[in-house]
Structures are given as C-alpha cells and as structure tokens.
Length: 109
Image (cartoon, rainbow, N blue to C red; front, side):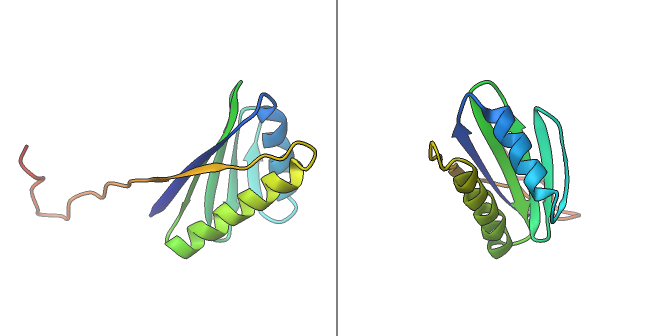
C-alpha cells in the first residue's frame, strides 16, 4: 500500500473540507462532517481532516499510478475551489513499514 500526506494552510479548513466532500459525492462514495471526511475513489482512499489552521489529506492506494490519480483529483479540486485565493497542497510521501513475513524474526536491535 502506498501513502502520501498533504496539507493546505487555511483558517477555513472546515469549509473547504465540506465543499470538497459534497462535490465528490456526485461521483464517488464519501462520508464527512465538519472535521473529517473519507473519499473512496476508484483508485484509492483519501482521508481529510480539518483543524483551525489547515486542511490535511492522508491518501492511499495499491500502487504509485493509482496514488498519483488520487493526488491529482485532490490537487485539481483544491485549485478549483480556491480560485479567488489560490491554494496548493504541500505533499509528502509516507514511509510504510511492512510486517515481517510469516516465520521470520524481526531484525535484532
């Protein structure tokens, strides 16, 4: 599983979260409230979280190409909804740690 996290600094994070999630409900399954949301894209999942200073994204997909599609969907919609005061998501890759294979011991400290 591939993951990438991003954030957009804004005092209006809850408003943007709700607008994005409402818009996404036209085409995909989305659950959300004022503080968090889950957008289930055909290529992956994006968890959204709003706090007082930023809108946060935690996206995951099975492979890099699918994760890129999820990121593109988020980026293009953030750009669309912030035309008056343009914003961009600052993305960071997330290192995923896979569990040791069955029957193998974890590395020694």
